[in-house]
Length: 453
Ligand SMILES: N#[N+]C[C@@H]1[C@@H](O)[C@H](O)[C@@H](O)[C@@H]2O[C@H]12
Image (tube, rainbow, N blue to C red; front, side, top):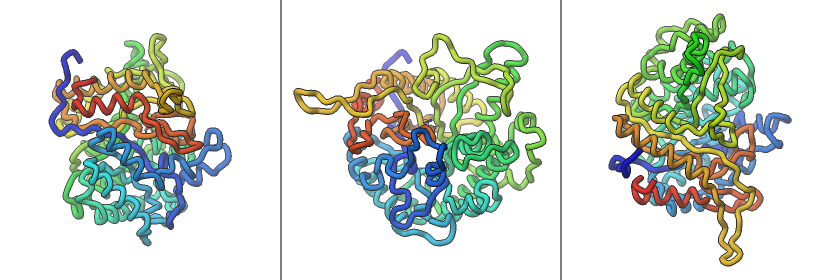
């Protein structure tokens, strides 16, 4: 990016979170347990034995957090709804106090000029549905559409941008193939079934929205550009497999109505022959796609399960606390790939950010008593990635907003509280919030609509 950027009028500047990662109080006011409530209380599943029982206590502190969003000047806020707060058993009985929590949050956002982007599913499946097979049960498409319908009836109109699923790839790869995430399964036979049912549920929820809703709905995927480590046929083939497995596995059925052929190659006998009518359900017209971008992957052939591919660490690369290479050009490359492959569908960057080392407690200026958290690496990361978004917009990609991951330091799933992605520091012992230097910087970016990158 060379010149002073001029982002499109109406471009949304926001931040993103997820229910289980910030709310705490997972069983309050009639809520049912989710698979993450269970997983976190299963010994050995969570680093340091951390759980989401308290997290950022957002369930009780949401007013304070909305005030912080307003002070930063956010024009949008992406959050998720905990399905089991709404339907404690996953289907049937609605918990009015669960609906009320999100209704009040949405009203507060709107009163403060912040547009809500609501994610229906950000990994916290009701435990009661997991007991009935969860994402392995084809009936979940109907269960998810029922839950989505409850939320559409309650909030559509105040919420005008809906997301069905967050990162189906992680749900499946982490929860059903490798077992690092809830519900902790490890099966190459279950993974394709979970993936396919996630996409069937996505389609059913979009179909329900077209009957009940009047605004916009989309899908959020985590995708990353795969660059071959060499020109060798083996590395090229490994890169092709990795690209299909992560970047095309969900966008192809949702937008094109079929899977990439590599998935049959990857899963072999574990890849079913899906009924044609499933793709009619999955491929529903979308109003936008959300892209979560963090890093790239330089890929080589290797003996690995199930891809026979491995990432090549870059000796001159800069890496975050989660071991991800800082590579902003990958975001621009990815957005151009998306446009070439799927056309001019509007795109939001629904997550982008980094975990760098931040202290457990904020510094205190002895003269003023003011708290401060210095995070120059995060500012550099964000500046370069927002710049890459601008480059893609200049190249013709219809990007309509940027949601920084994350508003708050939060529960990084099975990594617990060990990784801090927030632009607002959370002292978990006191629940004190301290906007980091990156938050102050982002507020200026927003105030100048991107001109002060
Ligand atoms: N890891 N990491 C950070 C972040 C995670 O905290 C979000 O819940 C996911 O949507 C996505 O993986 C990205």
